[in-house]
Image 1: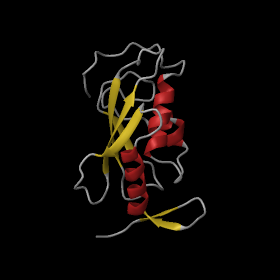
Image 2: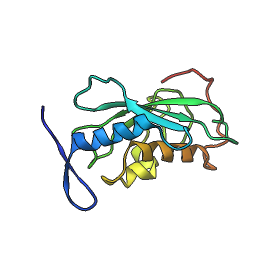
Image 3: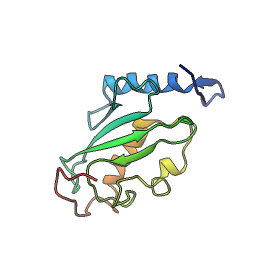
Image 4: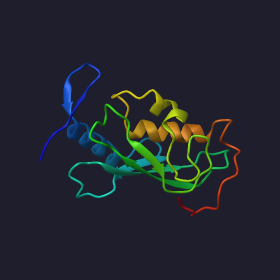
Length: 148
């Protein structure tokens, strides 16, 4: 078993897996109003690399009431480098590649300006906020249940 290190905002070196275990504990407790959630895709993943997330679409948008599933891959440089993020559920948003479901880092400010204090929860919140943005809230959406 090996540890990869990340840096906190204070500059202290924190093992990557400790950081991910903190995120796992937070995700398991539940977040805010329940409109987002996340956890490990496989409880046996000792590298804590593969995660799943859920976003419930915000009210007063074409996403309202829809449940979107996402997949995260936290590579060996996480949290110093952002995870890759892919929608499993088909969605029409300006920051999502319509062929693969990948969230395009240059199109989502949080990923584009990533720093190691950010985490999976912040990505889900940012994506949900983007669903309410003027650029995305009225875009027509694929039928529910369709996946990438």
